Image 1 (cartoon, one colour):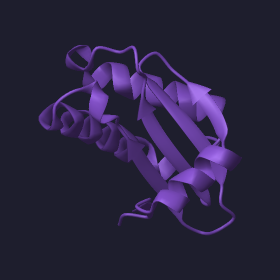
Image 2: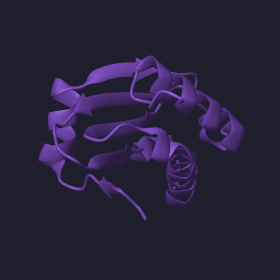
Image 3: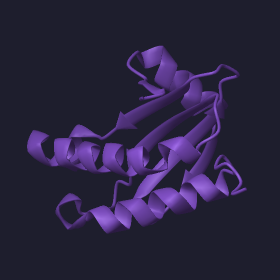
Length: 116
């Protein structure tokens, strides 16, 4: 069962951007905020300057799939916004790069559950 909800409103994104911690990887950036609720929230923000709609949608699919792999390992009560870095060529982004980058960011943010 999916336990993560999507951020949709502008003020929700602004809240995470202003109060969250910034983490950077090779191709993606993230803002992580402890929202003090039982739900996790995920936001994806890809600039229209990054490429055409089909390219931006592909990046969002890659980010969602990578997040889905780690969803059960993330502690509850976290809001995360993922961004594509501005200088990255959108056509060269591959799934394995995004997955490795996301794991590194989640470990830096210390929001993964400890292995028991």
